[in-house]
Length: 374
Image (cartoon, rainbow, N blue to C red; front, side, top):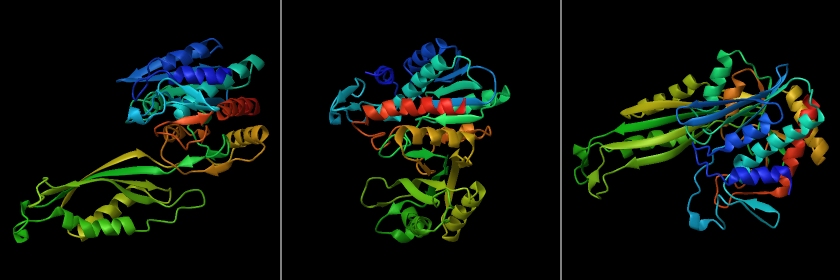
């Protein structure tokens, strides 16, 4: 069993459902301290964060990731205990196998191997690890980045260990992400008896034409690097539960995943114009969970892509698809940010899993990337 697989299993055995860390960061910190990293544990509210750094020269290459995992879902649907990692036919099963404790382990063991080869390596290496990626993402990477910027500590290159791959480790590298703009909408009506609709105002009926326009609208066509903007309803609730009462209120949650051809103000303006034009009486609260970012081709992407080609024999595809990641906060520092991890087909699912061969491949790719860059 490889050192990377052993560490992956040890991390997975800790029930670190967000925002709990359950000692994962202390385990990683002990390994990193042993090879010369300076360790800082940064706790904000109920969130544990780790900032570890080896060296002070430029460039600074940062590995970033999270120790928290999503809840298990129905335990009876799991084929084995989600927090007792189990290997069956070359596949490791358990919560966090792919998202992203295998990535964390590969970062640590790659640095152990690299420092053993190059104890006086060029530049500096850092780790930015949080337990708040799967949760609100308020007191995690975002806060650590604010602290680093206050200290004038700059990150030049960042590899986020999120599960970016599709079939085999390294077949996809994420070079950016779309922005995420959410709305909490309340449509105001007048409750009444369903037999006397003239005495009531049904918020479901009021919203329906506006909702049809919002969901069918072509917001844009994206660009050469980004998918088009999409509008999706995630929750829609109205009614008292009685079959003969017109509801007095409707509540909806929606999200816009938007490409850089849009602006937050522009999207908000379009949504509110459509609601007003259809005569909807509403209250709307907006939330921005991340702005889009894109990493131009540079030394980081070239070095990591070369590492993937050397280890796998094929060039990685470059993508900006998928959800948000903590890379959006680190990109605000002016850093080049890419995401590279194991395949993501099983993340957040029951029976989350990853092939052992993919874990070991990620360690080797990270190690080769360090050799290429430092």
